[in-house]
Length: 125
Image (cartoon, rainbow, N blue to C red; front, side, top):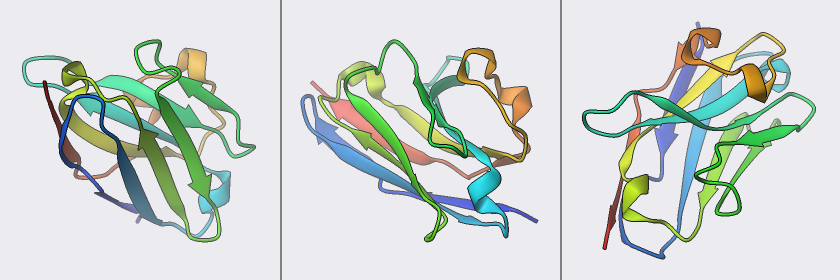
């Protein structure tokens, strides 16, 4: 059973930064496709960033140039560095994992087998 535990959320002012982490308990972590999704109140869950086992990354247009996804395969941890945060970034952020070789441009929620419980990010203006 794969478990994902997010941390690092909080409240910041616009322009600030946060770093989210997602610790995974899975034997073959390095082979998993990992991603961050977010869901704001009243809105559908949307993809934010993804990273393949070979390090290839993908980003939503709304976060390009501001967010950076990375992974540490030794620590089995996924990260999301969020800079220049905006109020519209306010959402619950979820970590997701898939054992399949995915591609960013085809990514959707149904691709992922495992989800964390989420961590709240609130950005005030």
